[in-house]
Length: 312
Ligand code: FAD
Image 1 (cartoon, rainbow, N blue to C red):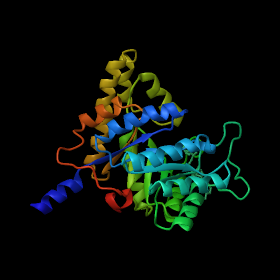
Image 2 (image 1 turned 45 degrees about the vertical axis):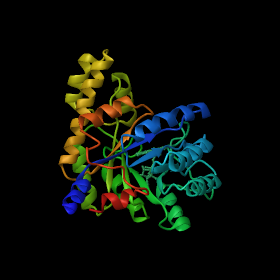
Image 3 (image 1 turned 60 degrees about the vertical axis):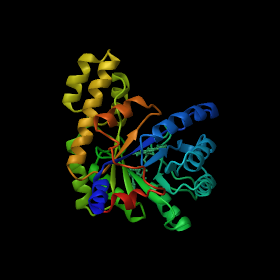
C-alpha cells in the first residue's frame, strides 16, 4: 500500500511559478505577500528572473535569499551572463549560494536593442553554455543548472534544428534541466520534445506556460516571442476580446486543455507558470486541472528538478 501511494505521488503532476523582480523595494515587499499566498498552492519551486545587464541585481539577490530562507520556497535564480561585468555574475552566484539557493537558470540575455547581435565583453561570456561551464567549474554539482529552449525558434535563430544542436551543447556543458519559452501550439511542442530526445537530450524538459489574462496581453506576448497562435485560440478569443472576464474564462480552458494534453502524453510531468506576478490567471488554470492533487504534499527541500523529474 505504501508503495502504491509512493507511485501515485510520483505520477502526480508538479508545477512551479515564475516571478519577475519589481522595480522598487516597496514592490518587492508587496510581492512577498503574493508569493507567500501562492506557496499555499504547493509549487515545487519558484523562479526569480534576472534583468539583463544586471539592473536591479541587488533586488534579485535579496528576493532569492528571502524566498529561499525566510519564506521556505525552493528557489531558482535566473542569471544572464552577457553585457555586464563578470564580477556581477560571480557576486550573484555567491549570493545565491549564501542564501541557500541551489538552482540557477543559466541564460545569455537578450541583445541590447540598439545592437543587432551580442559581442562578448572582453573576458566575459558569449553564450549561455559559457555560463553553465563557469558555474560547474566553480561550484561542481552544488547547483542544479537549468537552460532555456525555444520550441518554435527565435527571431534571432528561426531554425529549430540549429537551436536544438545549441541546446544539446548547453546540456552537455552541465545543464541538468530545460525550461521552454511560452507557446500555445501543443502538437508542435510534443513533436519538438521527440526531436530533442532523438538528438540525445535526456534531461527533464519543463514547458513554460503563459496563462491568458486579457486579449491584448495575450496577443502582445505571442507576437513579441513570434510564436504561433493556434486557430481555435483565435476563433474563441477574438469574438469576446473586449470582455476581459470571458477572455479569462475561455483562456483558462484553452490553457488547461493544453496542459492536460501534455501531461496525458506521458512526456511531461511538470508545468512551469509565467505568473507575471499575478495570481488569478495561474490559479484558475490549476483549479481547472485539479491541482494540487488532494494527496500531494509540498516536497521537502531541496527539490531538484533534475532528480525529481528523472532523465529520459
Ligand atoms: P544561448 O543558448 O546562448 O543562445 C543564444 C543564441 O546563440 C541562439 O541563437 C543560439 O542558437 C546561438 N548559439 C548558441 N551556441 C552557439 C554556438 N556554439 N555557435 C553559434 N551560435 C550559438 N532573459 C533575461 O534577461 N532574464 C531572464 O530572467 C530570462 N529568463 C528566461 C527564461 C526562459 C525560460 C527563457 C526561454 C528565456 C529567458 N530569458 C531571460 C530570455 C533569454 O535571455 C533570451 O532569449 C536570450 O536571447 C537567449 O538566451 P539563451 O540562454 O537561450 O542563449
